[in-house]
Length: 346
Image (tube, rainbow, N blue to C red; front, side):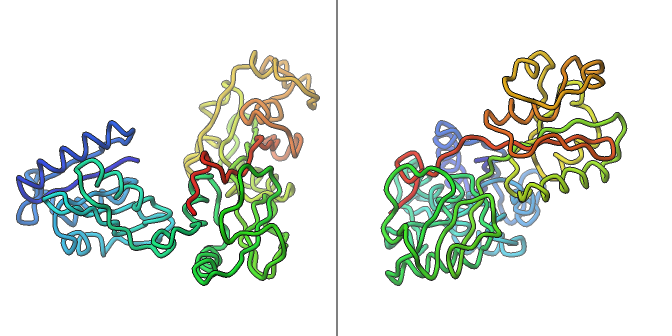
C-alpha cells in the first residue's frame, strides 16, 4: 500500500514514525508523514487540504482521536470500491481502529498491521470478520476479481451471516475446499467466477471476473485515440469480454510511444507491455501472417504474438483489423484459490 500518515502532537508524531517504519519493512510505501497542529501543518497545509491529497493514497493513518479522523475524511468519502483504507490509532498506541474501507480497501488488514507495529489491539467492526465468515469482497480483491454486482456482494455476506447456503460455480479450476456456507450446488443466490457475465446459473448471480485478459494491439502511425479506443472496445465486445477483465495491453516496442495506445492505457490505469520483435518472433503457435507487417516491424504478426507473449496464455480471439488498428485477445492460465495462497477467511 501507498500510505499517508498524519499526527497532531509530538507524542503522536513519535508513534507515527514508529508505525511507518514498521509498515515500510512490511513492504508498504510511505508517501507522506505530517504533523498538523491547530489545524495547519508546518508547510501551512490544513488538515482538510492534506486529507484531500491523501485520498489518492491506498491507505491513510491518523494518530489521534477518531473524531478528528472522521471529520477530516467526511467530505471526501465517495465509494467503498475506490475510497482508501483509513485507520485511526490513539496516541498511546492502544487501539488501531479500521474506520473506512475495511474490506475492499484493506483497512481491516492495515489496522491489524498497525496494531502489531506498535503493540496495540486492532478494532474491526465488519460483521463477517467478527463472525469468522467468508467475506466475498475481501477475497475478490485478493484474487484480483472484478465485482460486477456490488449489491449482490452485500447480499452474499448477509446470507452467510443468516447461516444460509450460497451457491458457487467457476469456469476455472478451483484449489482448496470451499469456505463454510458455499456449496457447489443449486441455491437462490450464488457466486459465479467467469468471463461471461451474461450467464446466470443462479436466480441471483454475483459475477466475479478475473482480470486475466491481455489485448495485443498494433496500429498505423498517427491513429486518433478515439478511433483506437472504439476498435479495442469493439473487439472485446465481439469476444464477449468486459473491459473490466482486461489487465494489460501489449504491443511491439516500436509502438511504445504511440499516442493512441498511451492514451487508452492512461485513461484506464492499464500497464502497457512493449516487446522486442525478436521476442515476438520466438513465440510458438499459429498466427495470422502479414508480409507487410514483417517488412515494417521484423515480425510477421504483432497483435496475436504480443497478446500470447504478455499473457503467458492462449488466444481467445485472433487478429482483427479495423481503421488502421489490429487487435487480438488472450487469457492467462489462472486458478480460483481457496487454499492458503488465496487469502480467504472463514
